[in-house]
Amino acid sequence: MLAYIVWDPMREIIKGIQPPVWYSVLFAAGFIIGYQIMVKIFKKEGHDPQNVDTLTVHMVLATIIGARLGHLVFYEPDRFLADPLMFFRTWEGGLASHGAAFGILVALYLYTNYVVSTRPSILPLKFTKLKRKGQSYLWVVDRIVITVALAGAFIRMGNFVNSEIIGKPTESEYGVVFGRVAEELLEKSNYGIESAEASKGTGDALAPGIVPVDLTVTFEDMRLPEQDARRVIENSIANSLRNNYAIAEHYVQPAGAINYDLNLVDRKFVAVIHTYGIARYPTQLYEAGTCVILFLILYGIWAKYKERLPEGVLLGIFLIWIFGLRWFHELFKENQVAFEDDMAFNMGQILSIPLVLLGVFILLRVLIKSKKS
Image 1 (cartoon, rainbow, N blue to C red):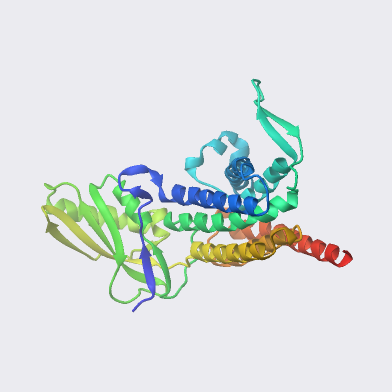
Image 2: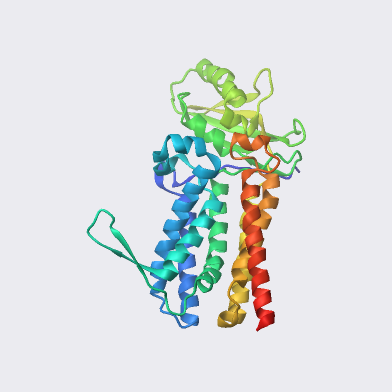
């Protein structure tokens, strides 16, 4: 048996209803569960758990603003400078975890050193300098990275559902064919298609990593003449499979006549198109798995030592683990933007290096302080 799978979940939780989508639910779940964990940590260490409400607001805003701004600055600087308002067009996509990391570090500095209040003014937010008792910057960051690691796993699962941040072709019979991309584009086309479903096909691979996929297409018009259905399949759908960039990123349709079966089912024509998909590395799952492992490690260290834990240890481990492995994961991922194709290391790898070095510096600093004391 071939080891690949065809992955084609709906983005929407309920078909035909846009909100909520799985990505949004998973994104929110990371913060909701993280909130509960932080409440437990604050209680265990004798701090007012109501502070977690304020901390969560800082975290949510920092993650969204930092991730969006990071993507635009690191990956689309020319477009962003030409059109700064694209920052608000979040539906166009584009979030960067490195930007979120920098945003969170800044937000936690504000949380530990300032109290934010509102006022009737052009600048409605007022920052009053006030250090939080018993909550130093490193104390807060050490504990927040526990929840960030878990949230990272949820976000990468959301990316997997969305078939985004995909891996490179495996060039083997192992991997994931992201079939939903073609399904969505065909369903939104003007070809009169009611639904499209991708599944594992039969037969041999076309080439290493080019594996059989059956694309089942149901036409919506019960009165559609058979010759019209065949014309759509042999011309429009075949052309989309070959030439549509978004579809061709996941499918390979050989030259020549398209291979398909057409049947009448419940007075509607249903075609099973025998095509091929590109098996790719499920890098989203790799990153989600390493985030879960990191969460267990960090939480286990905190549970054992709590207030006896030297400040900076968890942050140092987090930075080295997350961004060290991120550098490695990037070897198996497609570049996000075209200019990365000409670079020895892509943007994700370059941005990871200073954060790994920061983690090493923090752990060395902790080790030196521990020896002195």
